[in-house]
Image (tube, rainbow, N blue to C red; front, side, top):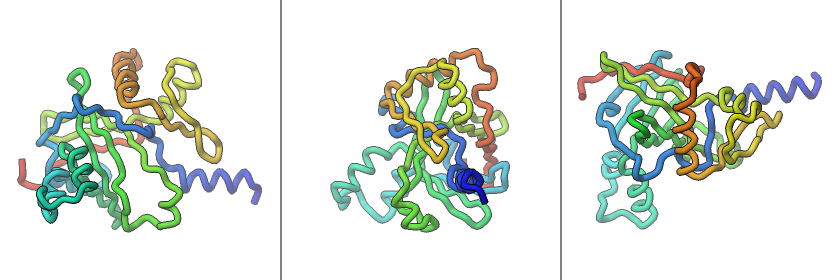
Length: 218
């Protein structure tokens, strides 16, 4: 097999994510806005299930605030207005912290993978850098929630056409992946400009889900 075919195969296996990745959060503390509607058990449009709870409540279950160690208090303070998310799909479970925030009346989620997940090989994990991703979040009239990730292909095209200027690095076996390195305030300026653009398909993406509630909690 030619080396190029090997490289392309590895790319398909290792670089399956097509979402925009950021070293820093897309939110700032003053834009965080907790939404109770997101709490509950859901099924997505791809038959995966989501268990979404308050990160604060999850952390306090077996770790009362007065007994928390200093490092736990730091985590608590950072994510007390976030969600703890378990997604199960085809017998695989992945864990995320999602922080809700609002810019110009549009709701977003900042997704961040949870550390030390059991289904991730230790050697692979030691080579990984966990990054933030941006989700546009909309509640429909029927109670369903639509979540759409900002697609990397859209941003790659803007960089190629020199239509955006934001700090970033390129990475990957083919040097065709983007990691945003701008700080959170600069990221939010980018979000504002992106949302104000005339591109009607700016949130077109293959990474999207429609969530339907499967429990009775409101």
